[in-house]
Length: 138
Image 1 (cartoon, rainbow, N blue to C red):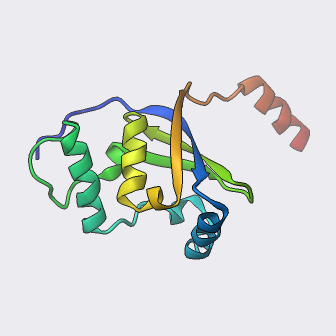
Image 2: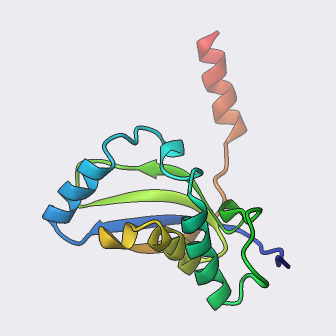
């Protein structure tokens, strides 16, 4: 497989459930997922192939699928902010908004919610503020 090297950018994705009933179903189906790493990183080859096909249709990948295909090279979930409301947020590192939507779709997320992703600047740490916090801990 010939893979293009793409520049990934930071996104905040807002996910809105289709209905209260669907939100309840989503919570029931995913109640075992307690931390960010429980959501992605363990996709089956079938799910990876589904995502690969969506990327190939958009000409982001070339060639044929193989088991070395890494979905995180195109859309990587960093953090998930999930509460009790009608929507939730995620921090992604991805090629573009559509790639996030494609990754979620290939995993069945589009059955539960609609997604809008907004590109953001890379998170920054204010070293002076962090240093002052560390000094208070001493």
